[in-house]
Image 1 (cartoon, helix red, strand yellow):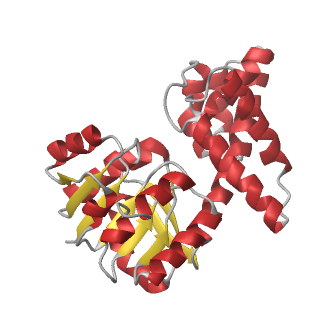
Image 2 (image 1 turned 60 degrees about the vertical axis):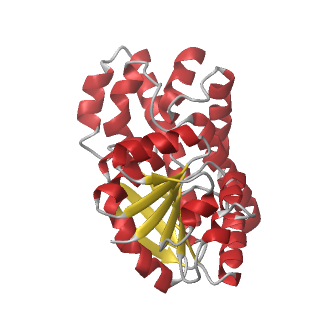
Length: 290
């Protein structure tokens, strides 16, 4: 069993850290809101620390799942950052969805300090985190990944190294690009069924067994039809992710017309007051305008 730190106890990080503790690892947690870290420690029997540096002191692995580029920099760098507390040879595993640019920056900063850095963004949503069924896409040095993989397997359905540093984040961008089109397509199908006077549930029962079937259809059509969106992956976070995708596409020459359009649809949802709604709220947008 390893000594670990886990930084960031949001809807994903809280249960992920819990799986590590249940697996027998020695886990110390840090969260920007200290009360949440103390609550986690009380629930799981681990420890909490007031700074990332203290949480990371003397551990083998530091796992992080925070909000964005700036949040990640803040827990890694500076006098109170995790890098300042980590021992040479320790490995930092970043589960946050961030830009490839910040991943490159932190990989180099870690390397200069004798640390390992693995970018390992996740997919599977809150349910995947709670059930230990996440898909983890990784980039970084092979040796660092090989050391960290057994730890990540505790909350993974699939964990794979895609390539060198940054490859994990690029793969997560592919994931979000695919999801954006799928959710819009599902929303349009349910909207069309409604306008055609069809029973949406009956329609999905049939088409989900054919080529139209998807995770989004299986897991979101009922809540969409029930007008329930106070759950899941928030629109605000999806727009952050799609912004990263579109910025990177401008840099590498990829054409993402559907992604750019759906990003604007999510902006409409934000303007409806749905920034914290699940990404499936694209259906609610259609219902409101049609």
